[in-house]
Image (cartoon, rainbow, N blue to C red; front, side, top):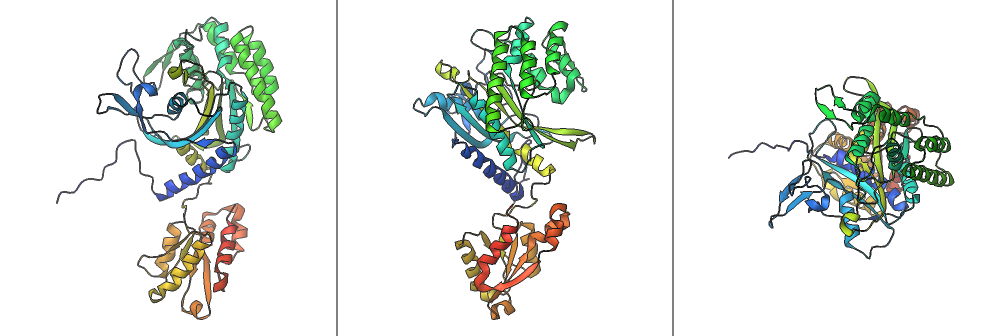
Length: 493
C-alpha cells in the first residue's frame, strides 16, 4: 500500500479546535455589536467573475496577480473573492429593491495569492460592515462608534486602542493646491496622486524618511529593491510633509489647522467640513477624543476610497523579531467609497464601511493575555467512574443539557485521572464526579478544573480570589444544575 504525505499548501493552515473556537468566540462577540446597530447578515459566493472583482490587468482580459483565478467550463475567468467589498457592490447593483439604506455585515474567508510569512496567510477571515445609499457622513461617524464598541466588547479597553480618522479629500486638496492633479475624468485617482497616497499609507512601516523618498523619485529598501515614487517636486513634498506632521490635538483644533493648510481648495475644504460634521456626531454620542481622534496620517492604500477614512490602532507595544519594541498597529479599517457600485449601474451610489482582520485581532488578544489557550464548547465534563452505572452519568449529562448547560459525557476509555486530564486539555470548567460514595448518599462531587489552570498561569488580578474558592465540593444530587451554574457564573465575566 502506497501512503501519501499529508502535505498542506503554502500560505494555508489548519485551524485546530483551540484556534477555531477562539475565532468563533471573537466573531460572536463582534456580531452582537454589528446587530446592535441594525446591520443584517449577507452571504455571497466564494467565486466571482474576475471582471466583477475588478481584477483584470490594464488593457487586458487576463487576471492580474494576487488572486486565485481559473477558467470555468464556459472559458470565462472566475476567481476566489479577495475581499468582501467587491461582492457587496455587485449585490447592491443586482437588487434594485433592496431597502435603502442597505446595511449589511458579512463574516467569511477571503483569498489572496501573496507571499506567505509570519502572520500572513493566503486564506483569512474578514468581518465587514457597510452602509450603502447614505451620502451623509453620519454613516461614517457611526462606523467609528461601532468600531470603538466592538473593540471594547472584546475586552480591549479605552486607552488600549484609538480610532483614527481623516478624509481623502483633505490630502487630495493639498495635492491640488501644490499643482498635482488629484482625479482624472470619471473620478478615478490620477496615478501620481494614488502613488502619493500609498506612500503616506506606509508611514507606520517605513517611517517618515521612507515616505518622503516615495513621494519623490523612489525608495531603495534594505533588500536592494527599488520602488518608484510619485515624482513630486521638493516644494510639493514639503507641503505634504507639513500636513503629515500636524499634531494630534483636539478634533476642533485639528480642523482649524487643516482649514489654513488646504487654503482655497474646494476639495480640501469639503474634507475639513466632513470632519467637522463627524466631530459633532461623535461629541453628541459621547465618544471622546481618547476613543476617536483625527489624524492626518490616515489615508488608506486602496484606490477606491473617496472621503472619510478610518483605522483602529492598538496602542500597546510588542517585540518584533529583533527584540525591538513597536506598537501592534491597525486591526480595523475602512472608509467611504462612493464610486464602487457605479461600475455596474453608471450611477453614483454612496457607501461606507469597514473590516476587521479577524486573525490579526486574535493575535492582539493573545498578546494581551485575553485569549484563553483552551476554549470549550461544553464547559462541563461528566466523568464516568463506574461503567456499570453508565445510565447515572447519562442522566446527569442530560439534566444539565436540558437546563441549557452544555455538558459532555466522557465516552473514551481511561481511568479517572485520564478523564480529568482530558477535561483540562479541552478547556472544561467543571468536572461532575459520581463515585460509589456519592451514589450511595445521593450526591455529586463538582471539581473546578479552571481554578487550577488560572492559578498556574499566575493571573494576578484573580489569584487571591481563586485561591479562596474550594477546588472541589460535594452537593446533593438534586442541586446538580444550580451548583454547576454557580461555578460557571464565577467565570462569566
